[in-house]
Amino acid sequence: MVNDDFAARLKLALTGATDTSLVYLGNFEVERQWAVGERSLPRVSSAASGAMVGHMDEFTLLLAGAGDHVVLKAAPDPDYLAYLKGLGLELPTVHVASGTDARQSVTEDALGDPDLLVTLSELAARGCRLVAHGVSTAEEDLARATGLPLAAPDSATCKSVNSKVYSRAVADELGLRQPAGWGCSTVAELAAAVGECRALLAAGRRIGVKEAFGVSGKGIAVVDDERRLDRLHRMIVRGAEAGRVSFVIEEWVAKAADLNYQFTVSKDGSVRFDFVKEAITERGVHKGHRMPADLPAGTLEEIRDAAELLGGRLAADGYFGVAGVDAFVDPDGGLYPVIEINARHNMSTYQVPLQEKLIGPAQVALARYYPLPLERPLPFGEVNRMLDGLMLAHSGGTGLVVNNFATVNAGAGSGSFEGRLYGVVVADTTEELAAIDQRITERLGEG
Image 1 (cartoon, one colour):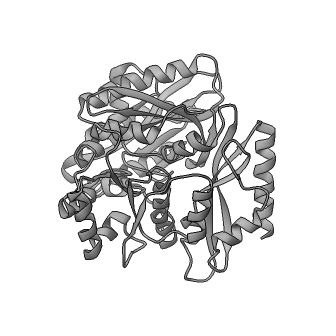
Image 2 (cartoon, rainbow, N blue to C red):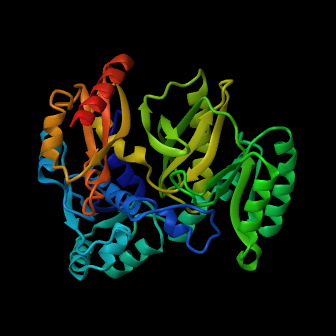
Image 3 (cartoon, helix red, strand yellow):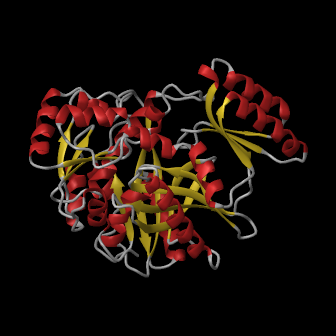
């Protein structure tokens, strides 16, 4: 599916050399830091969900290589590491932050660990560079505290590019198709957009109200009547500082398929298209990817063209690194090539090394997670036994590759909890893929 080494290409794009030693941080949902001080919609969160997000940092194990380093909130299960090595994967050196807090990112944990800061400072002296899932002020603090240079733009640039308001403005500027809508940076712009929406609602259409820095289905409200729109409007403007807001309001368009594509912008401004995948979502929440994406005729070229335009625009604004774009195909087969730009790594970013090393060019794959209702921590060895005969054993084979095990036990410690087993199911045909996926689901349910 992928013919060259993405990790080496990423190093070259970020540092100018393919052999730079990198220190990876999996600070997932960095949008929470970017959103500090911004107006938001009502939402529900929990310590359990925070712990799950925090332990998604283990995905970095598969993006880093033998000469690299990763900082994690917890030490990986030794049997899981042995399993990855048994597949022929070269793993990085792991550094674990002490005294981790589920409410904090791995970056914040590292900042609170004096011994780890010393270790990271020693890596800086050896020429290592710091690469995060996304860059906020916390990652800049860690870079200053350790001397590790960030192989990324500054946090202000990353936040700006990641804003949904920026995405709408850039798509308008480049002439890329998008739903009818408005990016709102002031209270006056928001009021004007709300007024425009009344005609859409009167025509029976729905409206999406989106926080500029919402993530994983949070910070979005879908509205189908004026009264609710007015309530949201009043709530947003109440307490808005200096008349400033950051929201997008747009028509909620019917979809036939959600897509996610990625390109990499090099420091020299060149743009490399990486891939497009079909995104699996449920109520706006990302659940996984299908690979390869089943695209209507001509759509891949449209996406490549959009990536080239967007990459050039991002480079002009000082951004370099991985950019992921959410897009979709409408029921008539038409492409909406940019719904939002993510100025960070994406879930699919961490899957690329597995594609390169383990998935054959003619094979199909499904990246997803399996929910596991648990009463106690579950070791990897037990899961491996439960799925005996369904785990991928070698490159080009079929079965499940586990690409994050830390999330299985992220919620352990307070009675029953739900874990998540993240993996990529590989098969030779779509029918075989569905059958293996079903057998894994049944087997885990029986366990």
